[in-house]
Length: 549
Image 1 (cartoon, one colour):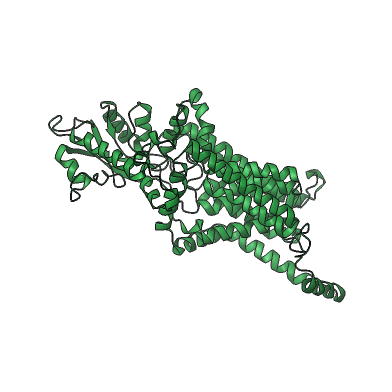
Image 2: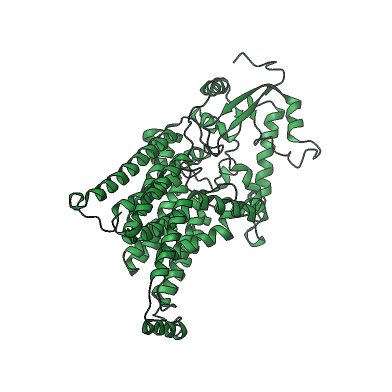
């Protein structure tokens, strides 16, 4: 791999063969990844248990309503900011509100993130082939688990990366920082943790560009976020409850250092070939560098007397500017170790999103600067490309007959209480929605600080929740639900306060409904998929047994 690739015909024969093999390997993996991604996009069933929650949020926005107002709590709430859904909503009038559309929009932002990775790698390496390999490896990482499904992940990721790379490209000019601030806010209103880009920038400006500029940017960022949240809170009073307080409590209950260590171990295993190659090249470079006595004394003097600059506010804190990409990698690792990596719910997703791009850029910069070892670099890169595809699920076959049976059962009934996995079928037939996969998070927000708690009875979270479950129990008692479908993750919620607390949801259900069948449906064999046994319940006295499926 040449750092600055010449015209192919001007290269020696063996070098042309090497580059040709390299590009063929890249092209083959790219084609395989595109086909794998296409299969995910075109799947007619959910890729994940909660994926169908996103079309319900989009439907709320497309109808002109707000998912964070009292009216839509908690059955149509969203634990994520809804910029992604706002982008998708107008498209539903043309393409329909379906999972395929949502995944297609996701794919656009995934590919956009990979393009950003390509240009960032090229800025560091000046190697088109290595930059392309870096982007392809990042593409493969983003196809793992929850980033490619209908979700705000890729939207937030694109704005996160753009807000980091654009100021770097334009030498942190004021104009580029204003653009970065806007992109950082968009990243936050796509998915919460992507606001970290503004933190990366503020800290780097402080230590490597200008303390004054860093303080100005940091203060402006903070004021912009606070101002926007005040406006959002006025127009969307349950935004903070759903997207911050409830999520914070849920994550704190499942987070662990064991989950973080496991994910970090898997990350290093995933990139083992590149990691070993990069480590070897760095060690070799350090061991072969020779420093003259004068240079040594100069370095020693600078380290002793000029390492920090505290006096000049216009100067950076450090006299030696750290590499921006390595700095961002260090920031990402810190966030993973201290916060995101402890969450086992989105296994490896956070690491691949915010660690992979900076690791890949830094690795390929090192590889591009080491022409001497390109004979060993090529096979290790090709192996990494192959492995990135090999670990992805490739079997997209499912038992469609069970889904047809389920749809036939649902089509015969008007009022259905069911799990998130069947939300698409409920939404497409204009049936009422009683919980959308995010509903059960709602009451966790009641543990928020007192200053954020409401005093008006009708707006209090517990009142809203009690009203919600009272409606469900009333519908059960009156046998208003034509069909109740439950699975291992979706049960009848605990009874409202006016009922005997000794009665659980299942016991109450059995008084008025009978389980007529169990239908096993399957999702695609990938993380978030699996098989689910759906128990079918019908009102007692109306239907004694389920009709032949």
